[in-house]
Length: 351
Image 1 (cartoon, one colour):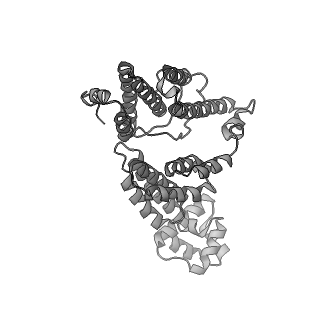
Image 2 (cartoon, rainbow, N blue to C red):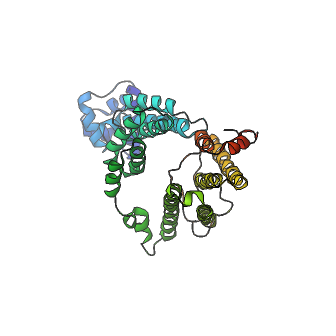
Image 3 (tube, rainbow, N blue to C red):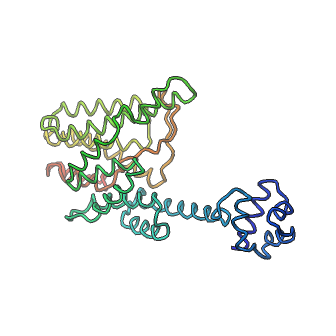
């Protein structure tokens, strides 16, 4: 710590263009004393520490380098957690253990709490036990975080739904601003300025995805649409809209949305016993699964869009439903036996 403190004093002094004599005069010590600190031959009396921090206009933690060490440690934890949660293997158990360890070191760090909640959510989704201890812990964390972080609201509503707590989900949802008051819509309403095209593009992407997240489950829950060609046609129109806006050669993380759309079409066709159409949509969904799996294994990259309306949009860190093998396994298990046999006997499909 002596060397670190001396190095930090020297770094700050040079940053401000000060001489050793300047600091010495301000503290009432000799320039030789400052020189010794910086050389690692000694360190200031602890009573001087607040005065040194005040001289350089920084906190005591920053003077000792705690902030840098803390930020670096947090970044290391989060990098490893993202690999575990979003990587090709998708190991929620290891991520849960890692985040518990991280919270022992940094008990109040909200990013760790959010990541732990996400891992518990993912784990709880895959286990049938009731009561579901993973989901119950996740909902407790999401509720705590939602007081200051509105980005967890959607996840909180999802867990409420999985737990059957629909009244809580509805109450929480109704407390949120209307779509017209959302950030993306509000900034898109600003006419002119250097960021106009960027904000409009972000609004388009946000609304496109919200449309998908409304239409797909609405069709899945509608007694008529979930087993008719009309439901498929509406989903295909939605998929075509994605293609027009994102570009037919788009290969970014929103491919996960294509996966959801095509898999829903496959399910509808299977119910209709149109197995040829069902296999066609399943094959397309599987292709998206393979694409996303490769992206996860290679590391997710920043999003870029090449179409005219979205060319100014940068990476939005969009939340996505990752194409995990269990999603395909669950979908296939709901297909008629004849269709399941076709899929499982084809060596192309491995999941």
